[in-house]
Length: 272
Ligand SMILES: C[S@@+](CC[C@H](N)C(=O)[O-])C[C@H]1O[C@@H](n2cnc3c(N)ncnc32)[C@H](O)[C@@H]1O
Image (cartoon, rainbow, N blue to C red; front, side, top):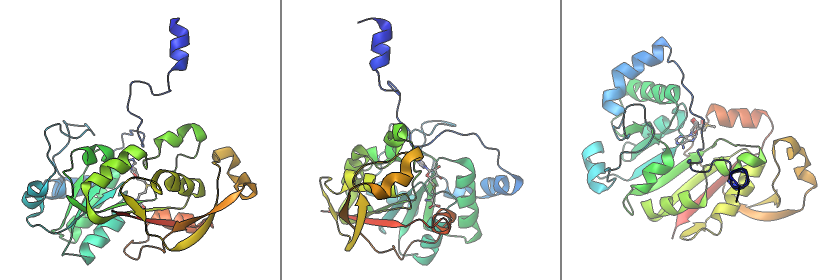
């Protein structure tokens, strides 16, 4: 095979990880820098492979002993993947001192803002890790997590980018292993095509049961950014989803979706 033919056959991100985010460097403003300086020691977990790396350290063993030594107790642990500005995870941690929380976020200002919110409330039951979330689940010991939350994941609307969506079969397998039996993965999105994607990945995922009790009609074919308007004319089928998760604070992402007239899709997958 000639060099150019073999190159053309390769998937676009051949040899590199397909990431659900774009690495952006963002300067922190003074307020966020002060929050970082004041609270990073207390709340930021040192589990990255090195300075500036979003990879998880190779030797990390995320087990009950790690939870006990980090949070200082054996309370059930909830992990939020892509916690953004931290409004949701911090509100949940404040409302539930009997639970432990871990926020996973890659973006500096989001991490800093979460530090700020947690620090202002002097919360003892939350930690933040700035790592590529799927990697954390690779090093989780079975049953170490009570719940996993993924709310308003980046939509990656173009067809050619759908593979960057964070909800993927491989992550589902890793989340399942990390969850205790009976634990749940809660997902929410305001993007109809992402809702179809979640059903495709999760409804038949081994070890999960969709416990939603609402019937929702969705197109059964995918649309991309330029043709999303054509979704209404596509064949539809019924799917099961959940009522809005009451434990979720209304973040700006959800507000924007609602303001744009989009429907919020909530999912609850129980580990069985
Ligand atoms: C659309 S925002 C939603 C934030 C938040 N859940 C909310 O509802 O306000 C998605 C977030 O996921 C984060 N993210 C995307 N891929 C990630 C990954 N692989 N690991 C950790 N965070 C990730 C992004 O940086 C972004 O902050």
